[in-house]
Length: 221
Figure (spheres, helix red, strand yellow):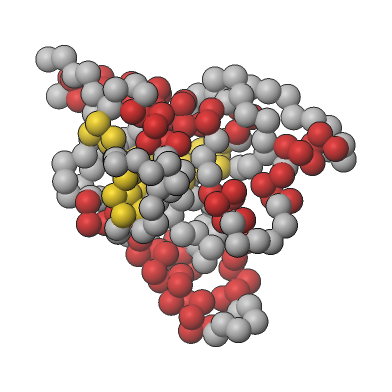
């Protein structure tokens, strides 16, 4: 049996970068988010990704699920909420984010990758069949001049192998600050877009490596 393409669902992505990386390799790929895709693609579905999980996908990659309440950096808000919000709202947001992650992680799909920061214990307790992230990568491992730790929770997929490791600039230099521009971006209405966008090198590596691995598995089945 010869298999040339996969049915791939990219969840929680508006940039289209991961979708295009898989499409460039000939896969039948769709993205889904509550917001429109910025590239205006007709291969983007506006809606809740959970409504699509049972549609017979070969691979699911959830790139930027809402993680503000799940990650370690946000755990402080569960005891002292930001101005204008309540503890009840913080815990409700946590429940909602954990439910989305949990539903995707336990989807009826053999190969799943979910990008998310390392979680605090309250988030872990709310996720069915929780497992720690399989790996944490950096954009500069894949040829992009940037510093941004990216953790992947993987099921039925191998860890990504670096493709073009760069050498980060020394700490305290202007060049180092440029590489860390995501973390140093000032507060703004669009800051979340900058922080959530997938780097091209990671997208290309994921499409080639996860896609290639999945093709071999599907062909052998």
